[in-house]
View 1: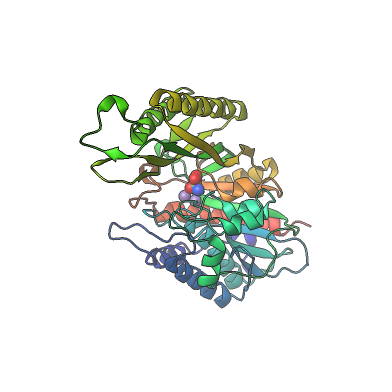
View 2: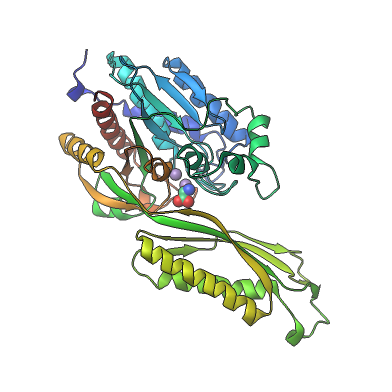
Length: 413
Ligand code: HGY
Ligand code: MN
Ligand code: MN
């Protein structure tokens, strides 16, 4: 039997699996459109299931469709969960989320080849609806698993076309009967691309993710008065889109007001009736603000509410500002971080501490289970873009650190 310290993942096999999965929902520009609980997502899930069952894993699926591929341990102890998400943005990349799920699968393949049995069971997880682009909020299933979001609210969430998440689970045969959460877990590990420029720019192989930054999502609705673009005099107009434009400018100013870490984004907007010769009567848009510190995020939140109120008055509009989600900043487990740092050094890789700018399922799971994340660099820091790309050696390095960290955790009493 190969000794633990000589164990390495098969980088070529991991890369092949990543490229195979990337074909599902593949876009002409080389990205992926495999949005949560679409037909493409169902095909990707089926491929993941086939690969896991080929490795002798038993698949459990919970009521929100999250998949757990279990490899039994020698003792019936709470499992080590390793995973991320297979769903993508509409113009997503090949690696966001997918790297973490398939590196977990590669870890199982590697243990099977080496004939290594761990004390604890290991489960590879594919969390449903991490991205939040189709069904808000993001990290929806892991939030319910962690007891942070009500399961029924999650199932009743609708996408922009009005499709209900629970119905989409049924339609694509993705609903399971396992309870969502409520069971003991030993630890959670998530390998993910950084989705920012720091590691590549610094020439680091690995990111030691110390915490996930806090984020708040809102929906804002502005209501004015639809009328003819020709005869309606400018002074009497109540133009919802003009008010929204002022608000978007204010949201950007809030992101700039707390340098260097604050960020703010308006990513979605629907204009009604969206006709070129009708003054827009209603506009609905999304707001995403983030910061690593709770008190600064709170200050940004207050400014969002103030900007909204001021916009309604200045533009003579009505409207609502709705809270969609609040994921507080969360520190990851220091003990596991220590193992990640040690294994990185033992493998001869370089690494540095980093705060996650993006949200991840680990951010929610860390609230109930000792959790940690491992980052790999990504080219030019680009993600949530079809050009997202990594080097195979980055994937291999990250997966080897994941393997050895998982082995340590899975052999603890
Ligand atoms: O929004 C995020 O940070 C993640 O990609 N869901
Ligand atoms: Mn992700
Ligand atoms: Mn993402």
